[in-house]
Length: 215
Ligand code: PCA
Image 1: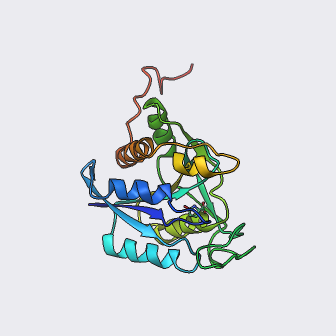
Image 2: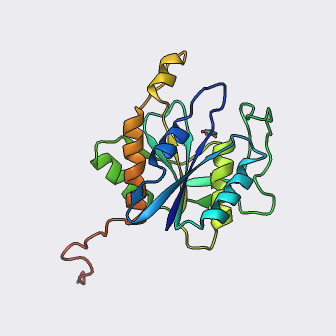
Image 3: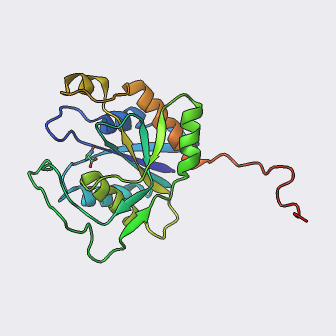
């Protein structure tokens, strides 16, 4: 049983990307009986979807989670929805900056995450790891990849979704003005826990009087 965990190569002039640092730190670990298989994706609109397709084909994962960096966010940010829109604010790593085009012309306007996003957020918070839900993965390569992930796995019963990560402290220290950051060890702990909860969500115990007639 494989879990596909993707990260992205550095982009936007950075030398490091927390998403790949976290993914590769978890590569080879067993989580709830499944093996984490990390893959680094190119931060290019042209090549990321095919690289994802190859990884899904090769690994046939039981779950797939993609990670990306979102400088400026202060918490582990569990994305709810991927939109069928590309509107790049900066150039990707191939120098491309597509604007106002769909990810796929023949696909729905949006896909929701199929991960148990609230149990994941709650577990992270309970473990003293700052986490929240996000309603936008942006309109750059991360949103495109998230949309592709949901599209390529649609109807297959494989839970999948996207998590954005804050900058690492060394990135925040160089940014002018500075941005919030989270250390690599905490980010790795957060994603390990998120994977465990996503694979085996805690069962909610019904309250004793739940379902009792109201009259
Ligand atoms: N973050 C970018 C693309 C790659 C990454 O790590 C984004 O949020 O779109």
